[in-house]
Length: 528
Image 1: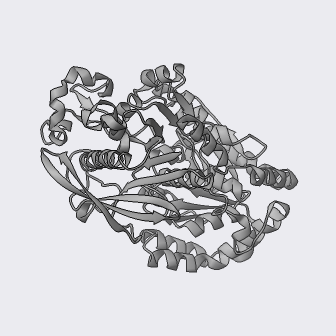
Image 2: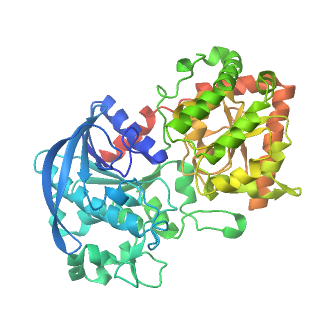
Image 3: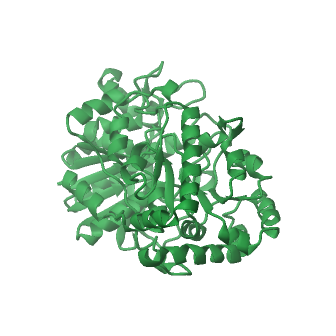
């Protein structure tokens, strides 16, 4: 088949989260099975791959004809088209995503118009390609590309691509890209970008509008749901969860207002959950400084811990040099490490937390259990904890852990440190409020590091309790935090009293197959 993938990010080009890993994993898996894949992305300034001018497209955006330059390159064997724009992907808009608040603008205003522009340009490019080659499937990811399928379904200009199979994957329902249909106050609206849609009339657009706003608003994610041939999400459990309404009093996050739409799709057998994968060659314990496999995981964890201790300061220096470590984290790291001996570090259990430091991922750490929050409980455990990540809660995490001698916070991200942490740690923590799929637990398990995770979404689908990891649940934030702490304590107790049982679990985790072959086959079946 000839498949077109359209995304806001992709590993190796520009990535900010799991979305980029999934897009790359699928592209690579499709290519390995002899399918033809084309990737369409914005041409952000951080993309350094050599690219040649392919074509110039004319699109009507913002009430005027606009010339769009399209560049072509090859990314690890994948034909890739990059949509270039000085106005939307350069200058202050050169980053993958824009913080509108820091620019003093309306909520989400900048990314809304950037990806509206990108979606129209991508739709024109697909139309252009369809005149040259037969396209079997268009696969769009998350709200950033939702309008591509919307245009393909309802805009007369794109009638020639209407019969192509259209897939849409929801990676995270939390973000939907909703914008006013008409301009209001200081916010520009959908009709400012696409004035020719005014001829369609608001009544014809009801299925694509946000069902919960006081004024008419286009919801790109809902528009994609109602424009796609098939909708997928990234785990079967998450597909089931999003068909149910949110229940705040039970700390349950489900369909985020779109549960009725998604339930209808599910009943029509047009909504399917497919678990993500990871690249087992990139996350490979046999490529670590101390190479190990299932057979010698016990030696691997000890040697990796020694490597982590010996490399500690050089890791800090390298992350500062590459600007991947946020500087206030550095001082506490150096202070704590200066009084830490190798024997103590290597002999004590090690716990890893590799995560975006956001409410969805780590809110339970701030919940009070028996009079103190979970960071305080971690500081009193006979174990070391290393945190790697950044996000809007980084400052609060730094404040909570600054005085804890056994908690080391790396405020930033580094691929090599992530792998070394998984190789050196006994357990990794993943207390997500909701988790469409998650890949951190898969990466950790590849190295034999056992996840202790919330029993939601893809975590529930990939972790078998007491076989290759630990799961907990609760019907409120406090109940979940209490159960989470209890699971951590029980895991440490099991490590102390029954180390062979933990080793067996670690070996089970390493044997679990999270490659892309099976997920890719499921996607291909939907595209056929």
